[in-house]
Length: 113
Length: 113
Image (tube, rainbow over all chains, first blue to last red; front, side):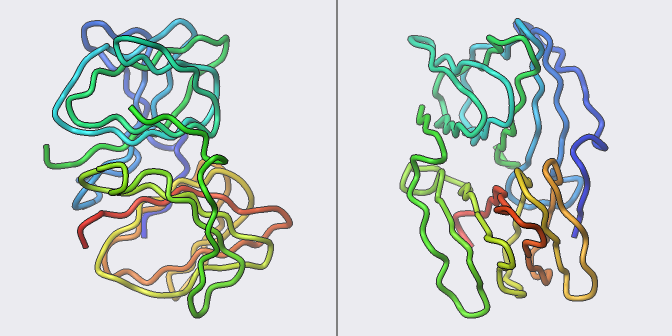
């Protein structure tokens, strides 16, 4: 059984095109021999965002802290602590911080894609 | 894109042997056509617990609120908000509330087991 506080897991800058001020912590992954899906914690700084994009795998997201929006390419929906987001495979999506503090959420993806 | 506050999802009593005061909300599941894994939110009342058991699938857990312990059959480890727990397939496990308020966590499992 692996037990760790998320703050002990290294935060890595997400360094892609169209990403601003996003860090990721890989909380559980294939490095732990997790067979099916990985858990990450994202921290988006004020004004920051993930890219507006699609891919053929899903996201399951739980919002922990802060104020953000989910953008599906047509509209934006506000997100706060306790919100749950399911992004289906091939669905356009982006997460943006619209508040003054860190926008934090956990996001799970399949390991085999 | 499905977006919902977890409080809008129905909480169901977990009614098995060796379970005390546990409710589950199925936040994302195959009902949403999630192909690989499901997200649940568990709320364990003061003094409550899940069963000490094993099964051949994994759990990926993120603690949201309250004070609990993870029991692997040999020792107990304290859990609080921000803790991450990976339970491998066939590993003995139990979650117990040791505080005065609701012990809340999200727990993901594979859909095909």
